[in-house]
Amino acid sequence: MKGMNKIKRGKNFRGVISYALAPAPHHMTTPMVIGGNLVGITIDELTAEFAKTQKLREDVTKPVWHNSLRLPVGESLTKEQWRLIADDYMKRMGFCETHLRCYVLHNDEAGQHIHIIASRINVLVNGQLYLGKNENLVSTRIIQDLERNHQLTRTIGPSPTIQPKKQSKFTRNEKMMQDRTGEKPSRKVIQEAVDAILTFFDTVTIEDFIYELQKQNISATANIASTGKMNGFSFEHQGVAFKASQLGKAYSWSNMSKRITVIQPIEAVAHESVADKENVSNPIEVHPIATPLTANSREHIRSRWLQWIPYLEELVASLRAVGSTILNPLKRNVIFAVIRTTNSEAPENSEVNFENSALKNVFKRL
Image (cartoon, rainbow, N blue to C red):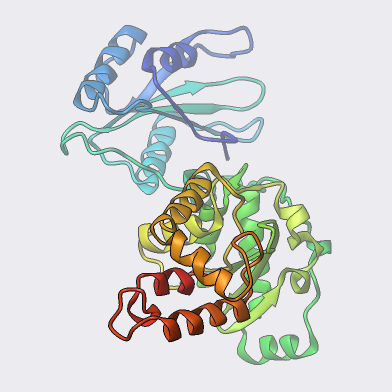
């Protein structure tokens, strides 16, 4: 059984309902509603029922949730079997019975399948919204469980992006430990976890990638160059650390970057993943990133220079006393000389005395 390549969310219920119920030349039978928790069976009736949920949460721009479940070519199920499987699937995906949904049966040469159309808005629990984090990955795993639990034909998942031949081999000690304990070496655990994430996500953001690894007790360290360039990851599992090169060529950033997108600075990823994600015990280790000069940073520099204005006369006079000018680079020995000169020439309690002067703070910033 297969789902769509990517679960879809949309703004308009009528559009997806019309698509699901519209007859087409390649259909062997007329599409029909075979299950769900709605009363209507026509496009207008279904649209009207779904529209009521939208009124509960007018702030939600995409209340429509749409996926399909498809059997291998030549196989079929009864309507009752499809209803049982679809209900089981939706429950495992995290939908409640009070999330409105309908199941539309299609039968064509590519295989019998159903379209599941649901509202993300719970009609009874104060319009509570179904979020469905990482739902494409979760859906693929659930479908595999459904195949086993409902005695369906076991199908092979999507072709992995990372091929096993690119994985590094176990060391002799790792093989001996596996034979002795019966547990997979940390290297293998990390390889399989990364493979699974990059296989089941079409594309994945860097924060979701790190979060998925954390759920499996694997911490990821983003290796960032001083220029801000992303060089890849290092991984750790049960106290055993690996560079990407130690896992295999498939785990280099040049390969993984084809499926992982960085949509915000790495520091922000670290804060969000640790603070906002739930049930994660391992922290994210991220090196600082060198950020380019932006308009905000330029404004900060200007404001720092404005702080010098009240002390410029004192600064110029002090620099002249040691034979320097404000245009020359302020080397550390010049600064110390200015400090000594200012202190020696000013009375102990004078406002010009460097030890008691605001000018001291200016020099401390250098």
